[in-house]
Image (cartoon, rainbow, N blue to C red):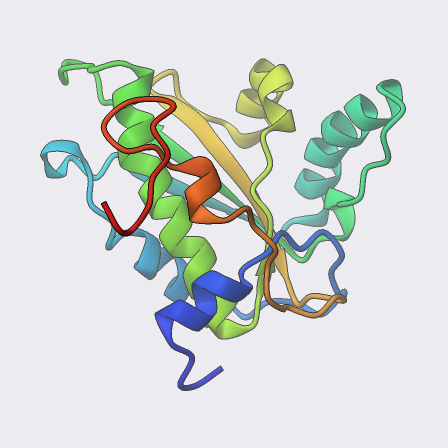
Length: 191
């Protein structure tokens, strides 16, 4: 994907839930995480931590939680975690004694890192999707991943070579989702 502009990456980044079985090289994962760590964070705390899960047994244990929820709700698990080449678990860490600003402050610092990771993956031709279903099984996920009490999971990002193609995304126009000065006053680029 040499030469891809940021504009192209943003406008063709979409959720990828079907992956080829081919492994993702550690150097590419390193590039994705390097991009993530370039995001801004509150007071430059850089609370993000990343767990790269390639072990098929660990992916299967996490997947059993995710896929169990999907089947119980009648939905299909479109991303079988046991078959995804890599899961990147994005966490935050607040060491004992450090001022805790709360989960919202940590999320505000970590979520830009997630977006950077997704954009770099897109630029490299790697498909990703942000998942949150694990949240209903936080205790089990913490145990499987060996998280200390000071760490919180913010996102699990399945990543791999996509079976589907990237392409332009369809989104609502800016004018439909933006207001000027107060809720309800429609935005227009021409005030």
